[in-house]
Amino acid sequence: MRLSDASSLLSTLHSYLHDQPHLGERHRIWSAETTTLVLLAMLIPSQPAGYRRTITNVHEELGDELDWKRAPDAAGFVRARHNLLRVDDLIALQRRIMDDELTREMSAAGRWKGYRVIAFDGSWWLLPSTPDLIKHYGQPTQGKTTAYQPQVLVSTLWDTGSLQPILWNDQPYDGSERCALINMHEKLADNDIVVADRGLPSHDILVDMAITKRLFVFRMIAKEMGAFHELVPFIRNRKIKDQTILISCSGADCTPAPAEFIRFVKRRNLDGTWTILATNLPASLATVEELFYLYGRRWSIELAYRDVKMRYRAENFHGTTVEFVRQEIAGVFLLLTLESMIDGAAHRQAQTGKRFSRAALGDRMKKILFTAWRVRRSKADLLSVCRGLEAVTFITIPIRPGRHFERICKSQYGRWRFDRSRKGLAGAILPPVQSMVA
Image (cartoon, rainbow, N blue to C red):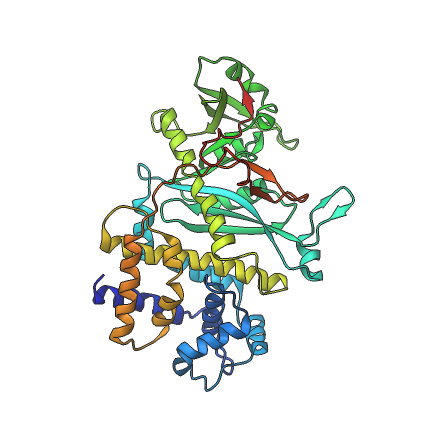
């Protein structure tokens, strides 16, 4: 990457970090912009850092820019988060970055036939055990036993092309992903295709998505298909792989019940089971194989949740109130959007068409963030950023075989982990857990 390109990228980031008229005014040594900077620096993947260590790090790097004669205390940062920072401000800043030219280029490069493929999924995140969070989000229970830590259900619409979150929603641990999707899908564009895994398809949501003209591809399991009496002939007939069926809304308040034609396709797996997809994409637009390809792109949101929990350590929340937890969730998604923008700049220069390692980029995010904050940047700073981005372009992610492990539940509260201890599984590709036996 040339120095001019790096300088242009840093100037763009500088404008987003500073020119935020919707944020609050400066309050003593803290402002909303400064509070956002310290919050992002605290969330960037690095050695475990709390309030004091992060503030000290920012003071060492940007003390002259911030006019800090000494590092502020952590109590001042807590008050600044409470008084100056709002979740809506962080979401608004994320949307501004999503509209940037580099981010839109990344999204456009990953489109399918001009359609943006959006994955939807939910994930449970562990929270600190405080009375405020327990009251708001609740604790999982099993029988008479209650989990020690509360959990939050985070549902996300994820752009599989630019690898960035579009919308997110937080609910109590016993919330509904279906309700989250119904509340969020109205904000999608007409050329968006929503792909989702099992647990979502129902009469109501399929008909609702079809009536509102939202394109979708959902996978179904036996429990869900059992509620669809209309699918019995299609399931029993092994020769028919693609069929359009009239589905009626099952809600009690639907009089008369609305109905829509939904397309169902199926494919036989190597282990003899079947995978069934429900969609409203016509056969003229997507063949059966293309529908399974679209569904396969949903896996990127699973990788995103893995990065959020493992690389960003999102479950190690620093805040102990609902507002602070939501700030940190919004901050992590803001960092993922910044990664997409910087990744777009690296793609533009490399022009290889390959996906780069976001983990390698995440290791350089703090340096890029601090350099972008400065008004004046030295040539050494620009060279450092150039070398970092050039290194990212050379670190590609190869496909590694033999990384399929059987999932077992190691906790009574439903936290799944991979069992890597069992011999014979490391080199074998296990068939996916399907719900329908031929």
